Length: 477
Image (cartoon, rainbow, N blue to C red; front, side):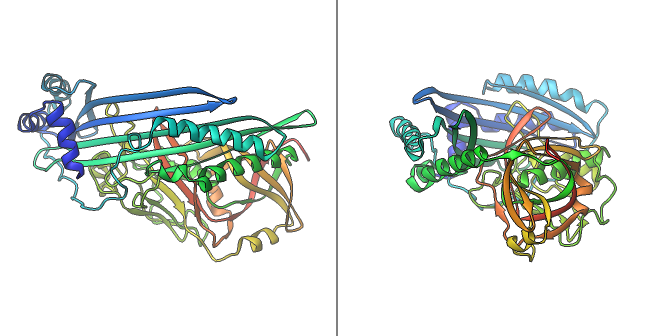
């Protein structure tokens, strides 16, 4: 069944909306405006958490609603409701029309169409029995406890979502997308000689549950969580001071996402609040550094066939060989900056207006072998995995905590360390990249990005990197 057929069933047949009437309301709402759309959403989601040997929580939720947006210049009128009926949409029209007072704009051309499909449209929640999902989590718990006698606590969780969206604007056929999303996570706490440490690992994407049910997948997640916990049992105090830092491949790209990616979103640059504002065409990173945002990777967590404005996603080059060449754009900021949308207009739900957001943000691989990079460092820190972090978009300053890191001693990976934080400035760090590995990897499919109170699924990736002169916060000298 096609996306449009499913969307028609959900929003017009089942909800009883008359398409021609709704299209007339949208046309009336956007008359004299520069842009806007009606965003219809239906979403099913579930979450199961198995903790301390029992099913602790299980939830299932269905939400539906619409968001109507009218844009005139820099002003946006937005109204939303969870009621999918013509009266509610009519009231929303009256609300958003206030933004067009004095406006005499011409509607921006609609996004180009696309026939591609980056993920299957099957509902993952409906294709696997509840008992099978619970057994999966119970098996993960038993497997983790049987792997090592030092395991004291196990937590396993499974989440899934099936979202159907339709975007209506005057003069364009409806644009629809069906988006599955699943994630499996394992957390393990171990104890030895009175010391407790934890490790965690997750995996997921825009796929069905079937792949997560495979023993190789869920056992791999448990094994990795346990490995990280056991490594942390052996950790010593982290060093402190300015030093060479080697970042591992894959998930450490979250630092790239936060410290650099947000600064390359169109709204921050249009308002000139980004540290990268006004630097288009200039060198902002060391030679060999190329950063892209790619929403077209099949089945990836951050990928979208079309964004939440109906624009097909694309592979947008942001930094090429160290030169700033592009920003991530939604429709409004692209129009105001005289650029084109890049398929990065995203929203958390129908209750939120879209804004420029990342999809899968990656630094491309270079020419150095990872072992060569480690061997080049006499003394430093090797950061393999990260937890939380904070960044100031205007200054570019960031702080990130490491969940797995090691000393580097005489070109070799040394003792694991605990409590390491990385402190720096995003634009400055880009200029300090001294070696780029040939092992570019994507994260396992667990990222969620927050911006202005909205959370959306994202992906990250990078190769092994050597960064010269990054400040490490720790307790050892």
